[in-house]
Length: 378
Ligand code: ATP
Ligand code: MG
Image (tube, rainbow, N blue to C red; front, top):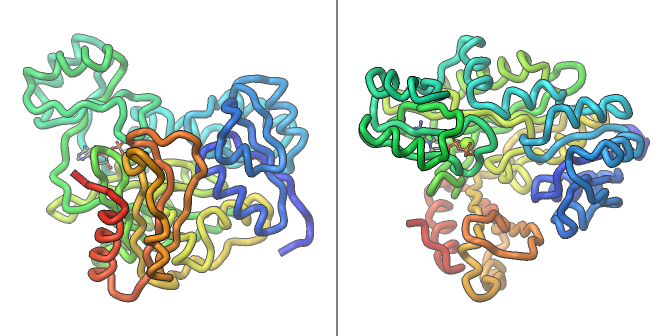
């Protein structure tokens, strides 16, 4: 550790920026957030909130000049904005890393170039591609817009070849990929930190359950054999090194019924499936991000306890705020709320981490608690 107080910039004011700010403050650093929304979770906690569009050069210059290093909390920040800030401040990860995670074709091509596997896919750029895809792809398949999709948005399940055209029209005919629907055994993710010297440290692998395309729970340790664990960690390290990424990288994987590992997607930032690290790992993913930006050396990523993380979406709010007092019955539950003003269906409002020794029991306890809060997982 050094004594210097850093000023760190974050582009984006959502919950990932909020939890980054919490960690930076805990470590004695200052945070400036650039975010157009006047009421954002991170903007309110930050030492300074620059309220502007992500493309506003005056605002980007102001952010760069105020900060020792700038990072990003969501991947759809224009790479040009990051390049512009680069004239005034360090920017990590580099703008290039975001080019890969912003476009599914560029992303998957890079993954394949590294000798890793993805689900089979085909690019749908125009009507002629529909014809080829109908003949050559396996169905059911998933049509995904190539840019700006998140939490399963901009996706359509296509059961049979004849439904492809209507699905594409339903998405308004943008550039898409058509991806084979994988018969999943499970989904896992590796989150790692890579510092400026290229040292890498992986967090324990999370096993993730999604509902309607949105992460519902992450459980750690993941129930996978050591061979698969090693493959996943090596794949994530290969990707981080290929991108020369400085910061946090999240890699989502599919595990097929035949125990094959396929890379689903990458995010050059902290990740929802890493929220368990806040309470169950020696160093959280947010603290690690701060440590990398402030040259403090990578923190210890050993697991302190088994854990199940449960996401709390706006659906839970129905008419009033859920009764959080219920969580106080067990001191192994750690609640994290994002201080969002409005609860909407599907909006991520918070999460809890349930710690304990026995993962099977934890799954039951976490599901019980989620149901008591009014949650349904249909
Ligand atoms: P986010 O960026 O929030 O993770 P996204 O909108 O980019 O989400 P994906 O990760 O592509 O979406 O998909 C969301 C979830 O939908 C996956 O985690 C998985 O559960 C399911 N899914 C997506 N693609 C496939 C596939 N090819 N086969 C089986 N399931 C899939
Ligand atoms: Mg995903």
